[in-house]
Image 1 (cartoon, rainbow, N blue to C red):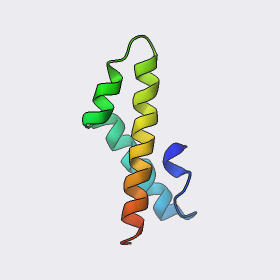
Image 2: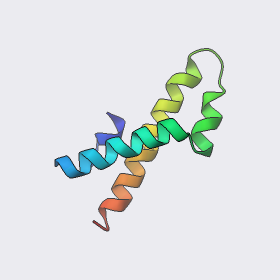
Image 3: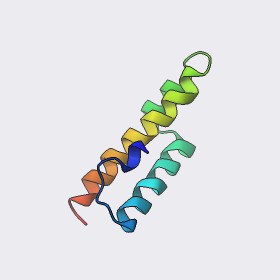
Amino acid sequence: MIALIAVRPDWQHALISVVLFRLFDIFKPWPIRKLEALPEGTGIMLDDVAAGVLALAVALLSGHFY
């Protein structure tokens, strides 16, 4: 849901945001991988939050060009 908070309300932008979230959640770039190492379930939850925030940022940035 974080990845969809501020994108344009159409299916194209929603699809881009969801795909970006899944890619960031699967491949875990640097800041997300670092969060995964936190103890107990905290790291598992925070890496999903970080993937959503990063997907939102990239989708909003790409929205300026598309």
